[in-house]
Image (cartoon, rainbow, N blue to C red; front, side):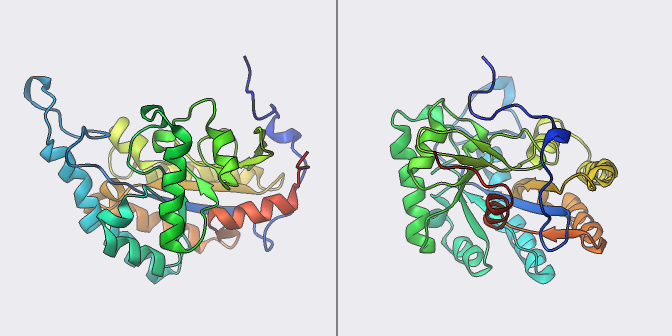
Length: 292
């Protein structure tokens, strides 16, 4: 079985599309803000228990994530506010009540709220997926005053029905399908849904929690990515997505590399920092698709 939702197309076969404001390199920063429940197994671990024993509460791994919420997020928010960089937050809806002052600060900063489940648990863990999605969307809607347009599934894990469910709930674009440098239209039972570029290569969870690289690795990867993108920007615009988590990129020994990345990108004359909703509006006008 091949891809059931997005037709295959090589990058050089894609039609040319108009750039945004004359800028061909679109920078998208997505900050993943998650609620790791104290009385549940942790979504990920930095430290295993002696003899591999699973324990609840898992104090060291809970505190690993909690540090990001207490110290990492203030660093990230203050830096982005100072640089006037638009950002999107993929947020577990339960963060709104678990960390109310943080949620308020993100809202005041004008960040886009992207649906990211209720807690950091995969879609397969829920018997009623539609109810789970609706719960997450409703909580964000009630807090922000508007329905989120974007969605990133926890752990990027979907069921075979997820895109269909999301489309019926008013979601217009998702980040789970990491298969192109530009948006792609995907098919659902209720009409087209847009797959926006995300990143597993420029993603601090993959780089540091999974692959265990040194602190400067994400900076090196951004520079190396740009070396290739620069050779291809005359063909079509490119979207460079950087995905970060406060407990990973917000720690002191890595945070300096985030600032270096932003320094480098802001010095270029061809970059434009955008949120997902802005990219969605641009692409649906630049490359429209029939609703039939």
